[in-house]
Image 1 (cartoon, rainbow, N blue to C red):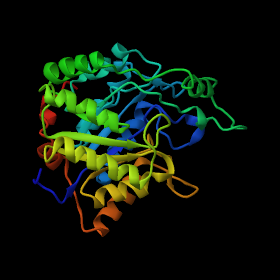
Image 2: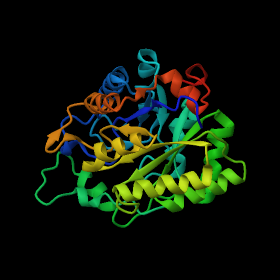
Image 3: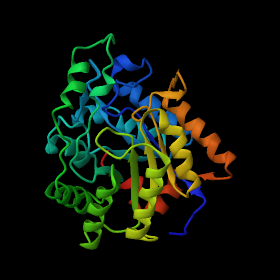
Length: 312
């Protein structure tokens, strides 16, 4: 797809459900913190805000729509950013739980994991860590024996309920090459239509590893499957974040940053906010003579319905 080919969409994933409060004092947990950091990230240049919710009492991931509604309207009122609500949530949530907030909010965009997978975050529980909450090591360890479930039937249901029912379009999260072929299955059936927005997710234990060869391979296969009818973005977990998303931008892609994906700004340096990471990648993009897309440009590039057609 040739339109705005020099424009780069910055997505910021503000909090997620992987990292826990004991890992960084800067991880936003309460609705106020999530709203404040999301707004600051948008002001720094993020045109898409990828959002999860947490129990404000202890920081545990939650799918409760009432918690989402404590920050979604505030973000919408303060920014023009595209709001993207996770349908992933956590591997410990049911599918109905994971969809509840999105079905109520009817956002412009939702994430959609393209398959069931092992999603191992148990290695984050390092020996000797001091935990603020008992749930933190328990949640991490639980991923040793569970899977994240998104069957073909689950995906069909999400496409129907959110896509057809709410006019929501998707950020298709592909954690391995097989997920690209699963997406092609739905594309060939006409259940998803271009321009597709594909997030190459690298570095999650259970998915493809975070290295340049794998990123190049994902891009090569996506080109073969979807031709010009897609745009891609790169998500690299942990310390490979800035290196691989910079590579993705140089390859013609878009980028994702945020404390969901990495708690750090550089080697040994915790990011003090999501906006820190947005500002860092914006500086890199501009040094590469690339332009950062505005929210309205992102809407045009991804054929979104517009922020006036959501339910919050």
